[in-house]
Length: 316
Ligand code: BYC
Image 1 (cartoon, rainbow, N blue to C red):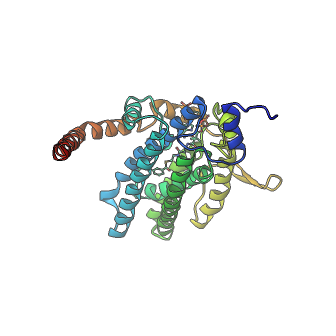
Image 2: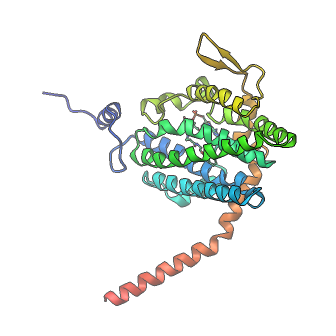
Image 3: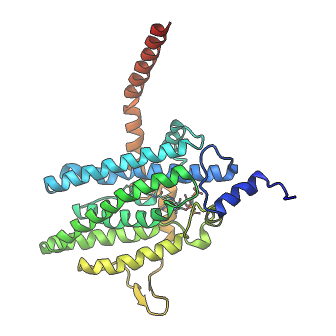
């Protein structure tokens, strides 16, 4: 007679056989907590990520660019809300997640703590930041938790458009005046290393990777994805007639990849721990938006309570 499997074994068996875990399925508490941590961090990144680009909506150089940027930033709001909804299926409330963000307890992507100083930074965010995000998120479409995987399919479709519009806008600058070309190269110089860091710590310093790979939350390691990103960008930058700010970037015939320079991990951890150029500004903006929206939440709750009462009275 076959031995009875434990809940844990049934769970891992599903994962090993590529069967998705759904909200009502049994799951180990640590799996639930890992997903809450990652999905909520991802949602916060989308919402905070609206700020550096939102900064340029009123200053976009043409009506076309303004319309594109508005749509992109609205997409990011949608991604954030979609992801909060996916995290809620794991038993955390949206208020708790907001509270963790506003109190500084929850992380969000390091990349959004850098400033967007010129219009070219907006193109660079599309090309490099969305490019890095897609590299990380396409494998997440196959992650083992159903609601997160399905959310990622939608998000990746929209982000591919974001990445292309960013590159196209940089391509226009690359054919412009000497000042525009200079602005383009400077934006690439500013955004390159933070984008490379965005993939997270190197594999030997990533505490969560091994377990997340076993649970198929992660399909590739941080360093594998980072290498793919470098390989692609090292070629694409040539089309822009620009360079990446890395003197050690060099094609390696033996490995079939680009070698690249040392990452400044001290800078990465400083930014992650709250000391980046814009951390304070970003969190203050979110906290103010939350406080200033209190009357909307109060009004919506009062309206819902009145409606409920009216329905109860008419049913009686
Ligand atoms: N920034 O063991 P590790 C977008 C933390 S937004 C800050 O490798 P894990 C867009 C990590 O949380 C898309 N913190 O962790 C929006 C952990 O700390 P805790 C953003 C980072 O989870 C607007 C510690 O370092 N994408 O597309 O296995 C405009 C150790 O790391 C970062 C996502 O959120 C970082 N960069 O792997 C434009 C993707 N990296 O929690 C575009 C979803 C690491 O132990 N997330 N940390 O305190 C993931 O794929 C994974 O969570 C990560 C990290 C690869 C980021």
